[in-house]
Image (cartoon, rainbow, N blue to C red; front, side):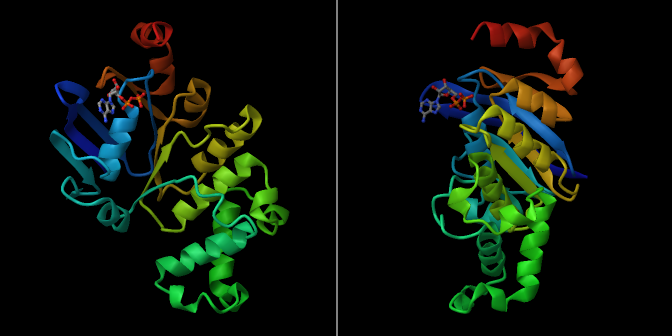
Length: 246
Ligand code: ADP
């Protein structure tokens, strides 16, 4: 089954075609990455997928449904989640508290926030299970978010996106600014998530991409240059050329 697909997706800025007829197909449970040098169209593609930008031409499908005309919010409701840099929001909260609140919000239980989080036992257990699936150690789950290493804070953002129970998780440079040792742990945890979550990673760092992805789409000048499994992409001379020419 296809989790996410684009057909002929294009976006012009004035007379300039930043994204030019991209066809992308992510199977259910995929670990797919989109890479490309600066200016290749990655950010524009992300914005077209989330609905932040309207395409000039082409379609976006989520599951079987054409979502091209839908708002960002409507796409989130249909199971497309992305991460935001939000770790400064609740620096005193523990990861368990932050994820519990996100789960309560998803259930429409925000009106009960005045109750102590510990009153929602089953939801707290669900929050712990979610953090455990991202390899948070018990002590990390109970620590103030601000005291955690930056890589853990970024992973908490991913946990908050997963609290929406998405079918597709869109990660736009999730390891930006994270020290190399920690960034690998972030993506290893995501790769190991249950396969009911399909993951699309947009990333500039080639090492991370080759470690994470089972399929890679290489963009250049707004179009798909190469697509295939990492080993094939790595030895494709066209890929080396666009990266070396950067
Ligand atoms: P990447 O994320 O791969 O670096 P972008 O999607 O940011 O690439 O940009 C692709 C191309 O589209 C670039 O040449 C960029 O200058 C151009 N572009 C992106 N956004 C706009 C915009 N709002 N107006 C005009 N040109 C844009």
